[in-house]
Length: 563
Image (cartoon, rainbow, N blue to C red):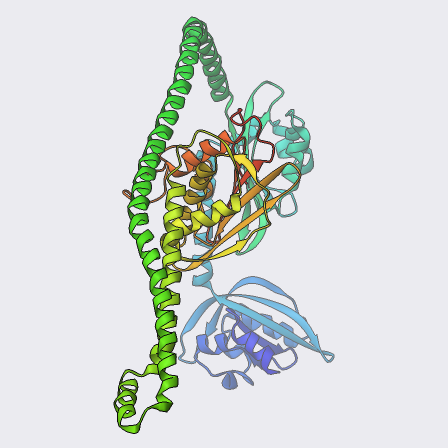
């Protein structure tokens, strides 16, 4: 016998003996048989089976086998003699086999006590299950995996009114057809009874032809991981359905009476709400106008302060510029005189020339001649920058202008950029992509304020180091100015609120929330619009679009669009 066959037999829970019919010798025995009887498998092989089966009826049976009368035995009580001389009560079965033309008998035996215990436990379990099925308040139907009825409780038959003769006929197909035809949902019920091996649990409402309502649930029955059947539970919920229907009707009647009694109140409240909404709109417009006026007055004050500072700086810058020009002329003339002296050195004696040469060497005359020219050039360049900043401050101070004028928006961008340069230079690199805009008639200094707000906001949006890109462009009808940053972006839930007065995402004390609101009003005043596109973590782009034809500035226009 090969190793796999031996392994299989040794792990069989039964005692297995293979007996040669003509000699009654045991030719094979598994490990459970040897272990139970107290022998080794080698000791059992070669023994006569009558040395193990000692009961008188067994001796007679094996003598008949020796005489050629082999008969199969099923679940017969017997006694086995152990190596110790003790006897064990067993239940055995014998099967007749033929191997290479010779008759053999396969004996399978289990201890009678273990089998009785298993049978008793099974009987108790079945009794408990039957008692449970009968005591439950639901009708229970159990089908096996082939769709045959494996069991049902009495309540199920009573609920469906199954005739007694149909129950006793054991006609599964007829009984299932009877209950299927009893409900309105015939096809649904038939499909549920057919889907025995479906893994899903089901819950359905079935309407009996006698007006009763059943709640039918089903779930698969498992043996290990294999579906071996399906259990159906049926509950009569007719009274519950009727109570729920009565409750719904009562509730509907109550709702109708409430609606009727509140109709007049609703009409009066509608009028009141309309008036309230109108007042809210007026209050909101008043608040926006007040906020914009407050910001405008604040910017006008800042403009006056800037104009005063520019004026005070302009006076000393004027005489410094004049003095620096004179100093440049004096230095040039002194350099010419120094050159003339150097030419005269060739006519001087050695005694007179020696101290001059020593002085020139001490002061490094060649470096002084080059450096003084460089210092003068740098001083004049710095003075020009101061002059330009003063002019930008003076331009910025005209935020309260009341007359339109023709202006170059790109020049306004340059001027505004110089004003806020100190705010930006530590946070971002500025990239200019100007397309060469034509001049338009507008309020240029107010637009500069819009550009300033957008530039400052772009700088604040950049947390470490980033880039701010200024772009311009135009077509036949309009021109536009775009401020793009590589900052943290604006959250989608904030995009619809950024132009509202006092809305800000900055910490307390770092923003008033009026910058974009005021910019919105200025752009609206120019019949333009502000477009916004933002991605969180990548940056934000504001585009100010203005019409080229500004003959009717100030009309109503949608001034903001979130992209």
